[in-house]
Amino acid sequence: MAEQPSSEPALQPITRSSRPVSEALLNDKWDHFLSSLLIRSSLGLSFGVVFSVLLFKRRAWPAWVGLGFGAGRAWEEGDGTIMDTPGLDPRG
Image (cartoon, rainbow, N blue to C red; front, side, top):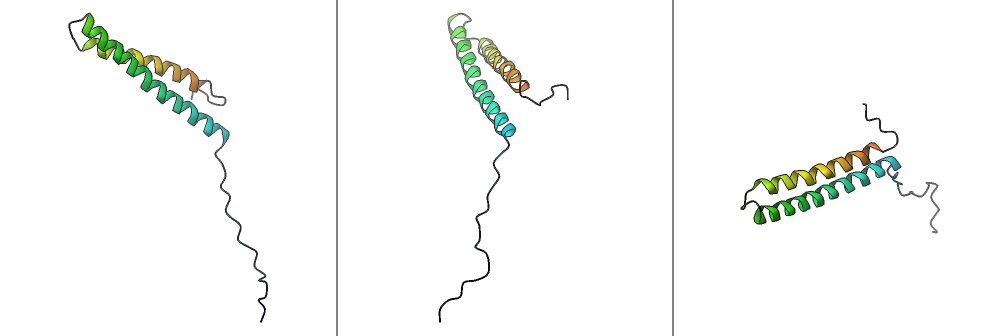
């Protein structure tokens, strides 16, 4: 006997909705912020260590100050970038 075609519709793959554009944009900004924080903090720490060795008789505070300056600079840049996101009200 020949097979009868079934009347059931063929199963369609489930399509997953992609992320909204705003979420993808915010994720990209956070990625940029975190990488900038890591790079600038590392550079600040490096300059602090160099100045500590050359000028401050191997004290620890220049390294910590350099780390703080680098992290603070990255924080300000990231804050400005994220607050420029359309639809984000910084006042709450």
